[in-house]
Length: 418
Image 1 (cartoon, rainbow, N blue to C red):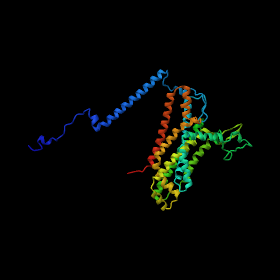
Image 2 (tube, rainbow, N blue to C red):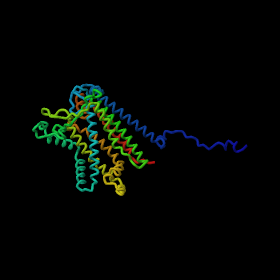
Image 3 (tube, rainbow, N blue to C red):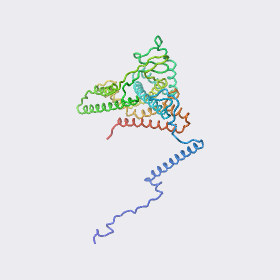
Image 4 (tube, rainbow, N blue to C red):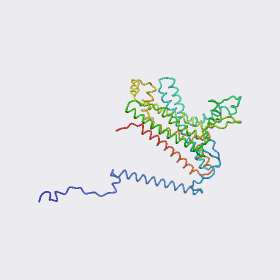
């Protein structure tokens, strides 16, 4: 009998398996985190159940139910600033949609203008010109340390009280239109030329604008492909081909052709009676809210931009100057692209703050979603819970959409590590 035949020598020494004990859920690190998460989830579910059940009981005690049928009832009120067709006989759902579009309009315009002002002010705050840097410091500190609501009311009062009345634009009046008699700034708002379609593809003017938007997005996508091809050629040969005329043609020609087929024409405002007619009427409430949000948020963005620029080593600027780059080219091509990695994360928060701060529009009578769905509709229908939930869901969805888009851009600007 050999050693291989001996069963005692061929059987490995295996430790006996221990049975599972309930105490391992607490003392064993392999299960402790799962236990904590399960307990936390149970507590959250129980809390939500208690909250919903308590709400239903309170509504029953008041003789109310939980129903969104009020959205199909006639609204019965007017909305002065709107992007789509709406009358007082439209439904509350339509009124809420108009308010949502108004909120998205002022949020988009505010983010664009605030970014422009913030970048300019942030760069100029670092200027070696003492007067320029001090003026930008006054702007930043002045707007950051005064409540936004006061700026909204101040700009609204300034436009309402200091601008001329429409009747003063008549022949022989004290006021006159600007930009070749195409723009009128009055105490009732600003009147600018509008675009009308004589041969629209669809009956709804909104759908015509949607078609133009889709064509513009496709053009921008093709422009991006052209720029990427130019980048590939530059990396392989060291010489970047001239593509600006191609990009300009791709941006203008498709949109111009479609607008020509639609019979697009400019409609200029003109005085008729005691007010202007035709064109686009930008009310003082919209302009005051837009400017106040942009100036206020732009002051915060300026500090973010300044911090991002200061985070870049001075050696980058010195190396660029040694290569013969001018200061403005150094800022645009060397400093700002690297500073974007520091600027983007806090910039997302400022965009979200601007979007949510647009709910202050009720102070100047701008009919956003807070004034329509969260204001008049709730007062008329008595559906305060449903209205507030819908409004909260809208702001949550819009904020998540902004965060998602900006996070995608942020991931593209980050350093790529191996």
